[in-house]
Image (tube, rainbow, N blue to C red; front, side, top):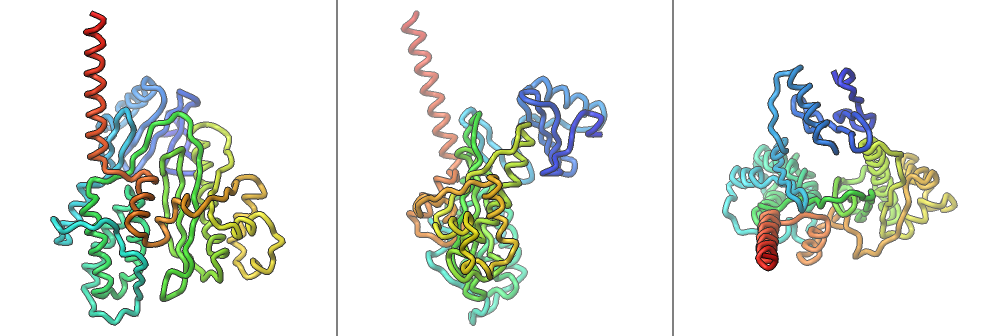
Length: 370
């Protein structure tokens, strides 16, 4: 059917179909029987809808507002994606609706173990709450690390682990109307942030990888994941994280090039570890890297072929730090704001106030001209 209508399936993302070029390019995202249609020409969008209506029995829900549990608010200032209704339901199911809010999802420097001697709790109840929180991460990168951390104890949870879950829920209660905000920009470059802690897991001594990718100033993908091997140094941990980020970045660059109908360009990868950058660029450091698994040397190939351009940044500029460890209140709130997670209720009120001021100014100018 897609071929008959002139569409081609994306080679980078099989749920995306493309048609046309330039301003006439149509992009259709498919999930089971739901479609998201976007493009630069409204006439082409309407023509595609008409073709689909003549072929299938379907409903046109108009401008995107809800999709797979995500609430989408579109204004002239940008787009906000949130899950406030879903978050409220999680709190209600956990019997914490109306609880005292917390400013951060985790206590700084908190370390929990699977070998906890605290009393056991109902594992089914624990898994139900954590599983619900994992879906909330789809619009909340500020929750990625804390939810990933409490997910490590679903096998035999104790009261200590449940206390950490309740801390996350109290943070959700205090940020119920928060979501990811996306500003409208015609031209934007793809840039990634790669970070890692060192041996943060007290049971396995494995590190945690943090990955952030921005399109311009808008965060588009995030990942907080425990590494599969034990790193022997901070350099190795950062090197492994850089490889994970490079894999994600190369795929995103290909997908973005397909969506825009352009050639794939190099991505900028920002790291705060000079040793890992040197190791990625230079094969001479054999003593430091001879024990590292071959698959993690993918970053070197990407740098040599200019698919990835490494950039050194200071620790304070490392936005992916929020995905690798529990931070203090001031640092956490600062990074949360810088990655685009805001109170969308406040954003909407500010935008409405700005529009009212513009209307008043326009009325005054018209009176003066009259």
